[in-house]
Amino acid sequence: MGVTLDLTRAPAQPVAPVKPNLCGLTRGELAAALVAAEVVRPDKVKMRAGQLWRWIHHYGVTDFAAMTDVAKETRALLAGAFSLARPEIVERQVSRDGTRKWLIRMAPGIEVETVYIPDVGRAGALCVSSQVGCTLNCTFCHTGTQALVRNLTAAEIVAQVQVARDDLGEWPSPKADRRLSNIVFMGMGEPLYNLDHVAAAIDVIADNEGISISRRRITVSTSGVAPELEALGARTQAMLAISLHATNDALREVLVPLNKKYPIAELVAGIRAYPGLSNARRVTFEYVMLKGVNDSPAEARALVQLLRGIPSKINLIPFNPWPDTVYECSEWKTIEAFAAILNRAGYASPIRTPRGRDILAACGQLKSESEKVRASARRKTAAPVET
Ligand code: SAH
Ligand code: SF4
Image (cartoon, rainbow, N blue to C red; front, side):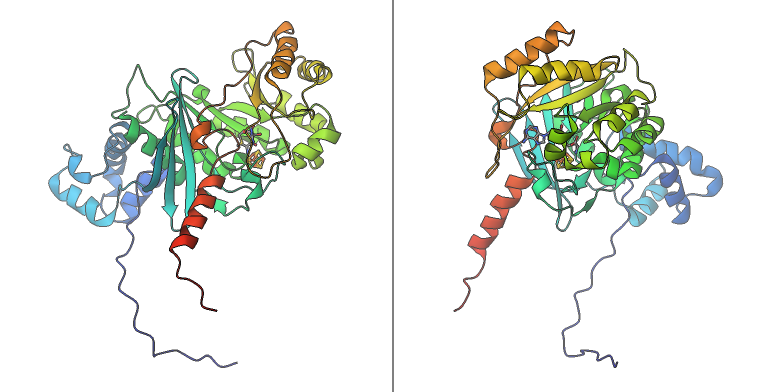
């Protein structure tokens, strides 16, 4: 088969080469990048990489010129070879309740949402995404109706924290009185299907000469990828959250189809073996309250039974509705009755107040609506189709 070259098209505009960005690299990658670009000699790299690390992750600088203890010539070399730029913020919204949501463009067509929720955790929690879309399709989750676009890189996960820190004015990393004290991997995507990048991002975020958010304040939520739990604990020492939502396999298979692959017994065995599990480091079980589906007193008792002996906390999540969903949120009094049974069994205040619903930042609402609005906006501005 012959190949024909089309020489009639105008040559493409010259595009400036994209400089590698240093902001999301692990310590090892940072050192390797400096040596490979011949900006730093191998015998000097440990010292230089440590210096840059503090500027990037403790001071949050986005310009090499700010690195005042680095020689001017070296700064120029660095600026010629690398970038410290943040990704583009496409949209920023602030809820009546103080919740902030950013739509961040990591690359063309790669957009994720990140949500900051004040007064959660020690001071405030950042809900980060690990994937664009999700391969799983939990029937109550709007993100699950969207195909997976791709995994986020470690740098793209770290960038979400940096963007939030920029907005909250939290550079250099404060030792006390932080507004962003906790990280939860509860945004879009299944973190255990992107464990390599999630683990590398946690290494950067937890580093105590940088952003310095302790691993005990970082929670990874999974829909139940049982075989990856041990690796998650061993590699990240993060806190574990499990999206349980049902106490028997028949119902869980409907709500979280992944349960067909990893049924409850296998999941619970994996949780019991989670490295570092103790009364001081409990598993959080998330349980979405769906009217007439999983909210009976009998199910509350079954939940207590199922979790017996596992150091755990329970979070009841009022269902956040989305267009065309078949589910409804349980009545408030039903949720309270359910919570009362858990309280009597020793689990304190488990109802999660929905946050940021007015800006579609609540659990299970992420990304979808922005895409929809943006798609219709695109249609509006598109040229009319000729008939
Ligand atoms: N994929 C991971 C992490 C992201 S989802 C996981 O499933 O655990 C974060 C939490 O929001 C999960 O517990 C999920 O079950 C819950 N959730 C999803 N859709 C929801 C909705 N419409 N209302 C309330 N919670 C929802
Ligand atoms: Fe994916 Fe989690 Fe939504 Fe399930 S609940 S579809 S795993 S994001």
